Amino acid sequence: MTVLLIVLGAAVGAPLRYLADRAVQARHDTVFPWGTLTVNVFGSALLGFLAALPAGDGVMALAGTGFCGALTTYSTFGYETVRLMEEGARFHAVANAVAGVVAGLGAAYCGLAFAQALAA
Amino acid sequence: MTDRPIDPDVDLHVPAQRAELHWPVIAVIAAGGALGALARYGAQTALPAGPGEFPWATFLVNVSGCLLIGVLMVVITEVREAHRLVRPFLGVGILGGYTTFSTYVVDVQRAVAAGAPVTGLLYLAATLLAALAAVTAGMWVTRRLAKTRMSAR
Image (cartoon, rainbow over all chains, first blue to last red; front, side):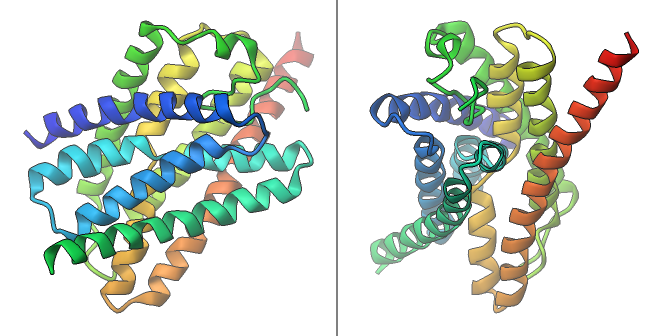
């Protein structure tokens, strides 16, 4: 059952990352990878929220491990950072790494705060 | 700028990727994402981390996924022309579904909540540095191998 829920969540999360990334890029024509930052921040906020609820095992498998796990990505984040460096866009590379981590963590804490506010 | 993409998921600066929005692409991303997520779940089940412990499974998943994206992207953008579903399936789907940013930041959050902020900080920095080193290594080794093969011909 857990496996099926993870498969379902990920089968939605991964294409959503792709579509969201396209949609963001279509609106911002820059070299900075805003699309990836957007999905990583959103997924981190949602997982921070779910982890703080705490959600049941089934919800965690579907929405946490499956959906949030596949929506967010470290491989894309890492590759972009290295490619920006390669292209000589050193500021963008460092900004991407720092902004990704800071915004992701901040988003997870926002999710946590929201879950706590709901529980109160 | 070169014509090689910055964003490996999709880069609208690449004309072929701008035009690739079709159902087969979405389908292979979904299938790859599911496979990648299952592999990540397998690793996390095999190497569980208690509260305040270093989350080795997620660390290894993210670093190995970064190594593989480095290899994959060099192969398909510099070495040989790939089928149009290769990047969506392997890169966007499998590697994107396998690696995770949300678990990474929530792992840090959990370490701090469990009273192990140093472990959390160490994990935060170690993942970032190892991931960037892994992408670089994957790209470098693949370029070297491709060059050796080319000159051997």
